[in-house]
Image 1 (tube, helix red, strand yellow):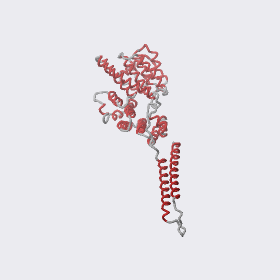
Image 2: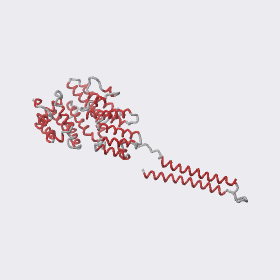
Image 3: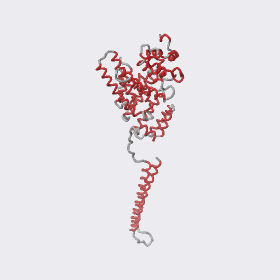
Length: 419
């Protein structure tokens, strides 16, 4: 930046000097034509002053113009060409290179200092050079509200970004995806997330009386895909449809109707895979990849029950999900391990006992590590959901692994549940 300013200053001063030289030449020409007659009193006749005044006046005007031109070039930089954003040069990438406040805010957010990060993002807005950068920074500010537990403010903020005519499609799609992800991350403990998400249009129309909450969120994610199909949203869409296909099979629906739903599942998986290729190389986004892969594994597991995928395909995805989640730190692989164990129990039962025990052992051998895992909270909550498939599968896991059964007892499950 300093080099550009210096270069601009030198250029302006050279132009100013050229103008002064031109003015000097005018003066010299005027002097060459001035007569030599002198009055007896030794004064130049008044008529001979006229060219002199004209010459010096011209010089003054040109100097003023030159100085003004130089100042203008220094104070008002020339308009820069628009930035070309690509998958290799994203808005986030450009801001990280050119906006110091944005870089500082990102570092603060990564360190868990969300309040300070939000303040820094606000500061970064003044350095944004176009509407795309402003939208990206605003999205980051809203996400800080969510992480601070201000869910009402975050919901309003995300919706405002969706309706902002200056926001670009990726930010709008991410804002909608974040509305859904907020519920699946924090919604069990904060019912206001559900109620406030589906207020105002088009959101209120997504929740239909008599239908499940998951159906409402599927419509929300589908709305987001009209802006841009994103991996997590598409995985959630595929998950809803594959569950519906399994339900239809169990209720005796026609093969034609089931095949129609399976087509929707595979279409969403295709869009999910396409976006996964993009986000796997993005430091700002790849942290959600394990969650997406786990959801993909569950979809493939259900497709295998329909004869539309193999158990090997599902297992490969589960194994990838466990490995990627483990990179996030101790206990971060809890849900991947637990869901993989449930899949093996449902698909193979005792045939895969050793693998199931291996997956579940960390929960009871390292209880402190997994105490804060969302999987532990989910397992505890399923104690009262006696009619759910998850409740039944957890009991099946306890039959295969005595250590896990004792762990369930420590989480509030009672002995009568195992009878």
